[in-house]
Length: 169
Ligand code: RP5
Picture 1 (cartoon, rainbow, N blue to C red):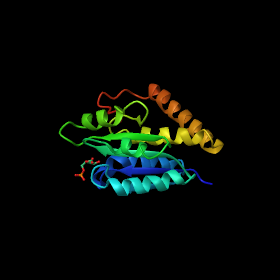
Picture 2: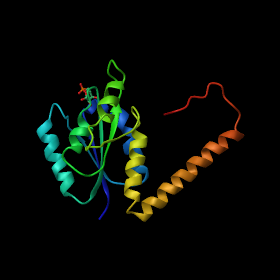
Picture 3: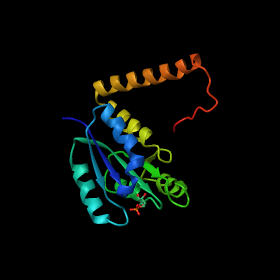
Picture 4: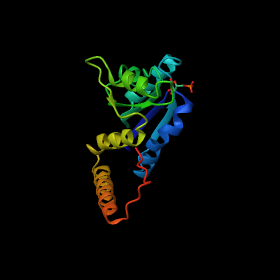
């Protein structure tokens, strides 16, 4: 049985910021289902999808990406005991601070694991680390990823310093 990730976005407009998560899952060859449902605008369809995810033992973890008054991750967590990782999406007048606070400030008893604003890559890596708990191949792949990442950082000591260098989140 192949472990799977469910990704829900509050709007199609969120996809450019969510793509880093799908890229990372593709890199680890982990299958995912990508859906658009809004906690506020399509509450019933969202709940129906999450019941399906909750019933399927293939799905190990859910990623929820939403901007503005982002209730999505919390609304999903209300319908499942599977782990939910929230990605607060920027783009509003408050530039994602609204979505960050909405996603991270869950009431006691109903947790959501919240990554940084637009931090889709980290959301995927967190999902992968959850899957790695019960999948040795994925665990090995994640250690290889970490090793390659460390080597890349260390190698930058040997490269000429570029004052214009831009760091990616
Ligand atoms: C949120 O409102 C969505 O997740 C999106 O970030 C934001 C704007 O949605 P659209 O107006 O682009 O559909 O619910």
